[in-house]
Image (cartoon, rainbow, N blue to C red; front, side):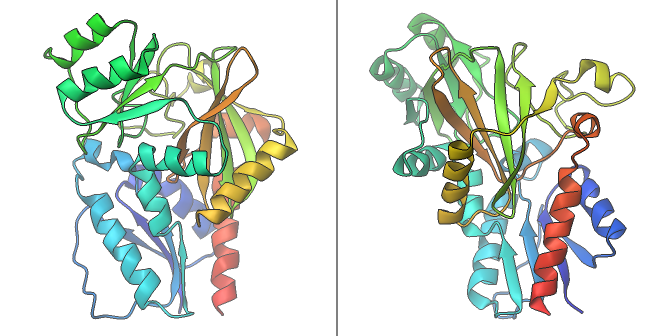
Length: 315
């Protein structure tokens, strides 16, 4: 019997989906690729393979999980027959682990992004700041997740002290981004959620206290921006908002379709001049239960329904 195969490395971010699949009586199997073996001589089993691999896997001790996942997805896409459906395949994992690649493709599609330079090496980070020549700016990891490694820099001297000091944190891929700081007009960023390539809802996120803005119900970073427990509703920084402008939705849906991404969150900022800047595409999207309960919209349920429908198409 065919089933849904969930490719992941973090059960805390997967159990909400499996619960919904069980609720809908959808057969599934977890493929935990935190480590593993790939026999490329075998044929993939019939089913729907949904990739939920995260760029932040290294923060949970799974340094090479995305690399293994990329190989598995390549195998599925090239060895699989019509009985194999891959959701968020190699195109998705390539964007998940590289913000520079995201910005290149977003700009190609005519979507506005913050001015960004990539640099390897401390001296080149300093040179990139000179080339950007805009203050304040943000230094961030090319491969990160959960906003880790993001730091607001107000001067060249501050950057020099940081990169040459004991607190400097290099990206896991060695590439640091020097990026113009886009100040949100109201202190919020917006995260638009898409399932099956179609817009579902948007979440307004209070960013006034920092950059680590994980919407999941269970985060591994022990920060105050991902509320759980009895006080979650009161402290939650996440609020589902009304529909986005239709032209913006169409633009993002077109981008996802052209880049073969089925499930994703697109995060953007609106500045005081009402200009929109997309700064992240998250293909391992998570959802905030408290915000959903208030709005009466449940993305994991919609995702499970989508996977069920894709499985039915295989026969």
